Length: 483
Image (cartoon, rainbow, N blue to C red; front, side, top):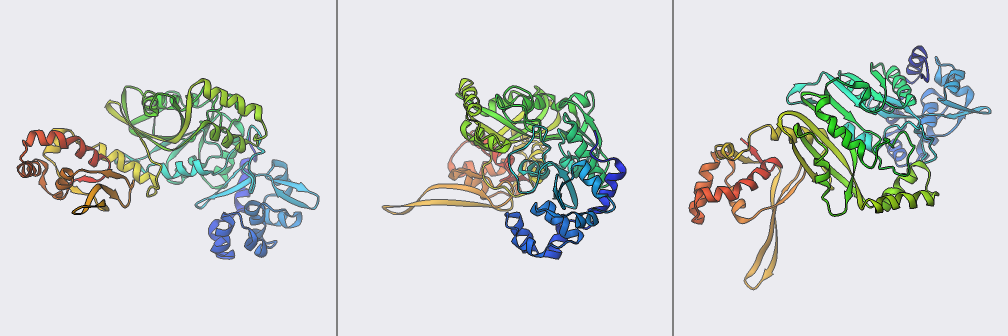
């Protein structure tokens, strides 16, 4: 399936030259563009004319009709009949409106079914554009793995090609798959319009790349827990419950070259009486994976159902909502988590770390991911840490709260706070606080422990046994650095 033949797609790419976010800011002003981002189009409407930039802006940013004559000039060398025939534009008497959406990703322009200023009312074969989830995955994608430059990448469930084109623009050889022929048609069109090459394969999830391995795998799959509200290709993976995420996790090590990284977005169930992290950890092979699973939010079943009914324009369907909620109740589901999973291919037993991160984190997330994996590639076992030198990481501050007592202020709580990076907070006791006060990267841990033991009248080995798990956690969470 093709939306436009390659030669016509190239002419569309020529027609869109000059239509960019930078051009909008330069011509109409950054304030007008910022207002449009919030849904206030008054400044743009007041300035947009029938020139090429004005026509493209009215169609694909504002979502307003334009005269057919002006559109014909603005889309040359692509003919107006071609634009209407493929669905890019919709004719309405002497005017045309946008039939597709067009969104900016840096210097790239991506077409999709995501019309401007619309929500819900989608067809079941709807092809998404750039949304919140895809922006998160764009921000997450690592630049290299284990210090090695990336060579080839796989985008599972590419949709309109958002992730695949971003990776191709970085110089990677990119394979992109999707079950939807319409999605692959948009991905092919967007590759041609932006002058990039993709290998596009149609099939269900992992099937098109069976037996192949990659340096980097990314996936924004149809992860919605859609029983019984299924049938939407862009969101429903055709697996029971959160089976899409479980399938990706199980296949992760088989898709990756040594040192390679896989990153995917997922929903997972919070089942009554069971920690969600146990459920997620159980998805992975016993050997070969180092995993970081981060939960960014959790919705209760009602909020979850209503969110996805609004997304598909089915908010009116009370029977569907009731059936969906009954399914959650029958399966003892208290909530649905959303987050991302990063997997690094390693030699040795699998290690899975699951955590919740609801707070604001310093972006790009790719730096956080690379830091997390890099930290765990250095030895922090008891013997190694004993001989190491530690320093307090930049941006770490000690915070305290105190209550007024009979003899003045009494500190009742103290914690370490990061000003950047993951921006973790970690409670510490006076012994740990005293230890960290001497962490300037010059003395070995064993010497610090011995001095601290003398101060507290403790046996060094016993003190280190108590300190070690705390110090390891502080190293792994970036409060302490190995000098």
